[in-house]
Length: 514
Image (cartoon, rainbow, N blue to C red; front, side):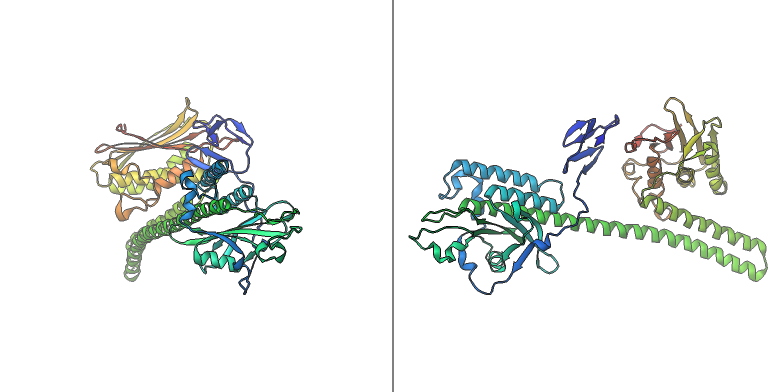
């Protein structure tokens, strides 16, 4: 069951806004901008491969049982009555086939996994043509071997293997033609003029799955006539209409397979590109830190050789400063790379802010930057993850210092306190730096995006926003070119104990900070 606790965006199930609803397998949920699919089938073991027996028959017996064929071009005839083969003149049947085609097209365009889509398509096909068993065999891209991706059987045949003729499958793949087969043609009991008990006649349809670029596999369905009939003329269960229908379905399923594989390849490529970008950015930053450490070590060596403690101390301060940079870099990487639940403890917000300011105070003094504070020491008792909030504040202070280092009379204004109206805590860091250009405002929260060149990792703001989102808060920034920027963290005094909070947001304002 899903329950919407009066969220601002609301919750939609299958496109309809709900307050409370029991979920069914395959339901689609829209929560904010995130789309989810509910499934009860994930993680269940599959024995699909064991249900298919793809046997090899060196004889031409199975190929000679083909009673009709259809080319890929002919499969397009299903789209309109005026183009449909003359052998099918039942308009009701044609309407049903067209309806099924639309259903199948809708199914393959859904957001389900590829396995689920193929399974749904196969079940629709079996119902449409009255087949008892069926499967979809796809080529393994690595070696072109056929593997079962979907299997469906009706009734008491669900535990049986489906014997699929390798001869027929190879013929369909080579000729790129769908075939309809019947072993009645090979049974001497069905010679013309004989009236006998017709039972156990097996019919099958096998069609290629021809995509836009390649043939990806085959669709196979069959049935066995187990009900006796005393007709002189044997009537096939499968018809030309069924064959053409499966040709169209095979085409749509193949396009779906190609699309899914393309998307998977695209995601892999994007992941590799993102990984390469991240490694390049981090490596460049670590190289700069190591250069600073080498400079400090050089001073320490000189101080030891000349017995000058002041030179040793100067070198050690450089080494210590850079080892802190490495520590902060690692912590930021850990924060941005994984989700975590805040470790809520009772804390004093003013003390947390003062500790963060203390860390950057020496750097600010060396750069001639003034830090002004307006801290509310009467803030009510509050619960938050002190280490995470401290890191978030420290990142804002560091960014602000970077912004004003080149500014004459650089000033940072740090405010912290309690907003009684919203029952929230806040910490703001304002600077009189150059401000953020308009073309940079939409990307400053992206990981590894830095406007500082080699001086920054591009992780600070991404980490701060992620941390404050984990506290059900938001990160607001206000900026004006030439006048500076102000970043504000705001979050509830105490965490919610029940329903998970809605996603946080980043707010951009154009007015100049005070």
